[in-house]
Image (cartoon, rainbow, N blue to C red):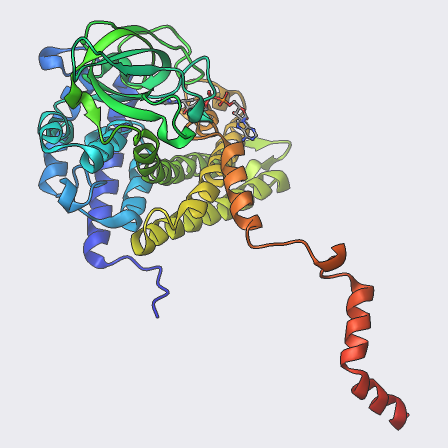
Length: 442
Ligand SMILES: Cc1cc2nc3c(=O)[nH]c(=O)nc-3n(C[C@H](O)[C@H](O)[C@H](O)COP(=O)(O)OP(=O)(O)OC[C@H]3O[C@@H](n4cnc5c(N)ncnc54)[C@H](O)[C@@H]3O)c2cc1C
């Protein structure tokens, strides 16, 4: 039996190295990120150029694109180690870019590795892993519920006049990085009359294919101002008469949902792992503030409300961390399918912990916390989105509740199992001889 929370010394050394690189190099770079040019030489933007030497160091340590198993071109470190690594990278919004595992490229590389043909891997996966291409995942539509993708309206139909070719028509939005992507992985309905889970397929669509119109990057809470072509934007895209060849189909026809599920499981837990890092950074800021800010005759650290916030945050962060690493461990030992409920649990719980810790840290800083002089307001906007993307909280709660309820059934005759009068009656019958003996002795 193993029941062990330790990290082996070799990997701990890697984690220490990562923590140092992230804090000493990437946190400073993060603070001037908006000043760097969006576009630049060789298609690289200023941020990528600035972090190019760091990427070389990451590659030399064997820490590049670690999310993929070795047979798919990655390092094969498993989800628990990835969890410990993402916890560090999560402290800095640009760190995943330096380590080749930033969403959505990380998830898209998993899809390509799982479902792509040899040619598709050569053309799209290998350059994506090398950091030479960028991708987007284009599934959510403005006019249909993203939380129920069986309702997608985007269609892909075979063109009888040009056998082998597909024509895609549809309207998507929130395709993250869509405006800077070299290719888009598009989810479209190919068999409208099939069973709901078998209606859709995935297509690899180069972004410059005629008929692909990147309308805009949708301004959001996270990026409230209109801008186009920035890393992290969420693109609205119209696909009109977009013609792609047969080899654009990713996986088999009708397999879109199966592949999406394979991507979303690991993708979700990687988000949860990164949120631990964001929450920790906010927590550290909250504690630091408590040690020096005085109001009404005492330090904030001496106010019971602030003490409660610190203690509650520490407890919730610890719970989220253990739940996340446990889900990762189930994935490593039994596979992603077995971890479905654990992943759903941590997706909504982790998002709440992230939100609450950042909210408390912001409150403890008062107007400074609300200002852009600290990263807390940005973290707060980021935390709010966590409750929506990769499935809203409510859907994950539903998944968990449904799964748990499978272990229960109605009691016989509708009497609750714990109904005390009934239990007493049963106990009296069962232990009648004892009761008789006791009464006789009296
Ligand atoms: C920052 C960010 C990045 C994103 N990136 C991408 C991306 O790269 N590619 C992509 O395709 N999409 C992306 N999305 C879209 C995201 O996946 C969808 O927003 C999400 O799936 C919800 O879909 P929806 O917005 O259509 O909301 P809807 O499906 O309309 O749901 C709205 C609300 O209804 C409620 N609800 C839904 N189902 C239930 C239920 N079963 N029980 C109770 N209440 C329910 C929930 O409160 C939910 O928030 C991104 C979204 C955000 C915010």
